[in-house]
Length: 99
Image (tube, rainbow, N blue to C red; front, top):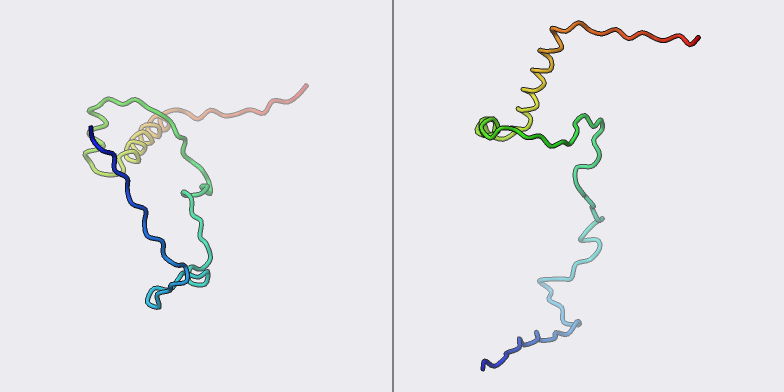
């Protein structure tokens, strides 16, 4: 049977002992607290978080081009949308008049 061993507690030091080469931190030394959490709200949120399933070879192609592959996929989709919208006549909206 193995004997249980316990760790020794650290030695207690007196709070009155001070090291002149390593003074205690003061509020003046630390300055004002700075809180930063995340990016913060966007000025004009233009993108929507979504999930999309792509073929593995398509995703691998964009990833092999380096970082920013999601932006490049977005650009390719935008070009396709613009190409399809350019050939289509624009629909006009009519205001309905209440009778």
